[in-house]
Image (cartoon, rainbow, N blue to C red; front, side):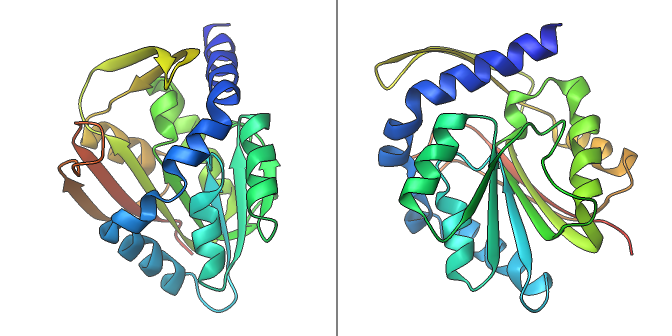
Length: 214
């Protein structure tokens, strides 16, 4: 099936760039005060001793930052090489291999969830199933932070930092993503859009903060 084949391409591509990705992106939060502020707000809302999952965690740098805030952080990624890289770099974080359409987690396991630029590898018709899974693993009144590139284009890479890859990056209109969240029963509480930072790819970005009703 096309969706399965696409996920295999994404997995293989991220396996290929895993270590280089960590070297280049692993300290990105140092230069992103807005991202840190949003993550800090998420942690505060999650309550005492929360368990927070980073969905599409890559090499685990965001999950490690969350762990540094005193939470129990869990990273989930499609790529086995990314998971292995994260485990080696951040032994204080739990990592699991899994797909956004079938998360390796129990119902209501997490107090909060983060999905920073991970849904960009999904087709538009996969957003609702993915968000339904995110809702499932959140506890009632749990919070989800989603970030994505805004637009309608798809960008393809066959070379990434000198590594051969075969991966697409899907941009989405803000209302398309917001509607998909609402359709699975998540309440969109806040929306923030921003222009790219100098060190980032030249794309407009959006953050949506959503809640699973109690």
